[in-house]
Amino acid sequence: MLEGRTQVLVVGAGPAGSAAAIAAARGGADVVVLDRARFPRDKICGDAISNTALGLVDGLVGKGAALGVPGAAVNGAVAVFPDGSVVRRSYGDRPGRIIERDDFDYLLRQAAERAGARVVEGTAVRRLLFRGGQVVGAHGPAVDMKADVVIVADGTASLAWDALGLEPPEPTELGVAMTAYYRGLARPGGESEHYFEKDLPAGYGWIFPEVDGRSNIGVYLRVDRYRAGGVRLRELFRRFVERHRLRFQGAEEASPPRSWSLPLATFRPVPAIPGLLVAGDAARLVDPLTGEGIWHALASGELAGRLAAGALSSGGIASLPADYRRAVRREIAWPTALRRSLEAMTTFVVDHDLYRSRAVLRALEWGYNRKSLEIAKTTAGAARP
Image (tube, rainbow, N blue to C red):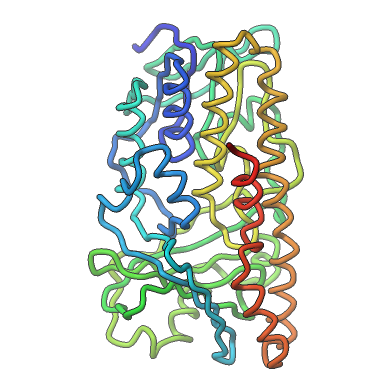
């Protein structure tokens, strides 16, 4: 039984939890991190780490650290429409990267330990401990820890949702995706391919550059549109592969398809009450346009850890929940939620065959290459020192 007390207790050692632990430990706090898994561990994901997310990794782990694990550079992106029309985007001298999550998350977990956090693996948390409306710790089959601040970063269907009485996300606030690895899909150029198609409304299919001979393939769409379509996710995945059979010619499946859900960013306040901050997917911060969640996890985790350490050292613990909600709202949640308008526009273009117009295609190419597409990341970058 793990018992005791710490200043900051982090539940979950994924990107958000590790970022929180690193920031809090660097801020001088005593930090304990709990995770039910043992690392390195597999995680269902598209494996895409945006260039802006890599910038956060540089700050958290060390410049260029992500280049030290197996991966593939993403030098640009291509959007492919149903008639084969394409628009391209170059990342210039700031490429993104494909890194499988077992390697990426282990990189961050190790960095948390180097920063001074105590990381305890194979330890599940079942419930938060309350006293007088304040969270004071966490309990599980083999753990009973008290803390001044608990940062919950345990992903979708977080234990914090039940503890705070939060309703599950509405279908319009939830994405669903399925992915598998394929061998034999190598193509020079290092572009991520995004296929916008009629049977994937409010979503897309993807083919990413290969890592160690395997390419990450998948489909993603919003749950309300998925349910309205009446076609099972596995069948949508199969149709995507079949529709692009020339692209998949000679390739073979290297893993069975697996699915997961993505809680999308909305204008709802991020969960935070006295003693408790919630970060990453647990805070429902995934980009509704792209389904990206890694940058949002790193950014919210770093904010939670940094603000918690600052509040503990300055005696400003009473204002911590409001400070965190305000920072996440300004830097991450609201700017990200605004991207729903871009998602609606893209879906409208595909649904109504507007991509066949040269003028529309040129407008899409202009917009696709503008940095303003990265609304949340641009806002957060400007807001930070």
